[in-house]
Image 1 (cartoon, rainbow, N blue to C red):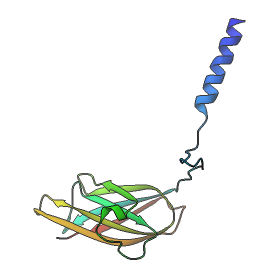
Image 2 (image 1 turned 90 degrees about the vertical axis):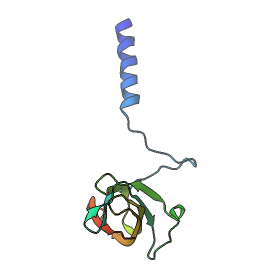
Image 3 (image 1 turned 30 degrees about the horizontal axis):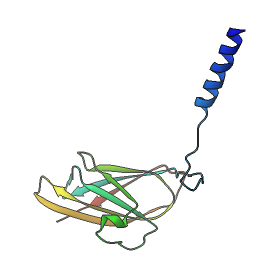
Image 4 (image 1 turned 45 degrees about the vertical axis):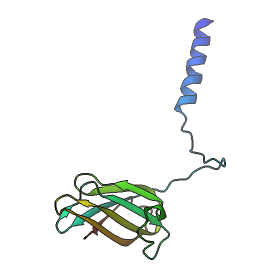
Amino acid sequence: MRSTLAIAILFLLLFQTGCRKEAVNPDGKVIVEGTIRLQVSAVHHSWGVPGIRIYLKKGATEFPGYDPALYEYAIQADNEGLGAFEKLYPGKYFVYAKGWDYYWGDTVIGYAPVVLTDPTRLDNAMTLYVSE
């Protein structure tokens, strides 16, 4: 009897933890995520800018401005100047980057539009040229 009860409890625990739960926002609506990944390489002259902040604004066709608060997404590039935005939807976006170029010794910025059109193409890459 105890072994049957133990098996039932174990099964119940495995069933509850094994199910994938959907993310829900504060309003109780299920959050659906996109499938597209956008890799950005921030480049000054011929080298990547380590640690530069890269921002992404969805639904933008013109440069939104220099204020980082205007952008929905933000990442920090790695030591090679590379960063990636995950779980995006197809659409028009604007990329903006601002940071300190240690090699050049100055603040650099850059921005460019990007259009993600194919939801089946999961990896997209762009080079964002920045300058003083």
